[in-house]
Length: 145
Image (cartoon, rainbow, N blue to C red; front, side, top):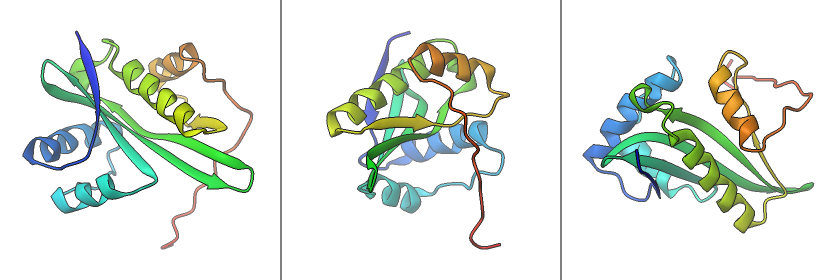
C-alpha cells in the first residue's frame, strides 16, 4: 500500500470529509472541524498538519507543533490518527517519519509525543521508530472550568 505524506495548505470538501471521518476515531469528544476551522488550522504558523494518502484517499493525519521556549526549540506530535481501514499498513510510520525529518530540519532539540497506555500498537510503533518512554506525568486543566 504506497503512502504519500502531504501538508495541509488549502481546505476543500475532501479535507473536511477526511477530518469528519478521522477525528472521531481519535477521540469521541473531538469537536467537528468545519471548513473555516480547518483553514485557521492550516494557517497556524506553529502547527503543520500532515496528511497521509493511500490509493488517493486521505487515511491518516498528524499535527506537528514546533515552538521556542527558554530551554530550546522544541517539537511535539499531536493528534495522530490512522483510519481503522488502513491500520497496519505503514501509514502511522510514514507520518511519524515525516514529522521527525521536519522537526530535525527546523532544529528542534527534542520531538515529544504522548499516547495512552491502552494504545498498545501505537506505543510499539513509537518505540520502534526511536521514541523512548519518559518518567513523567501529564497534567491537564480545562481553562474554562
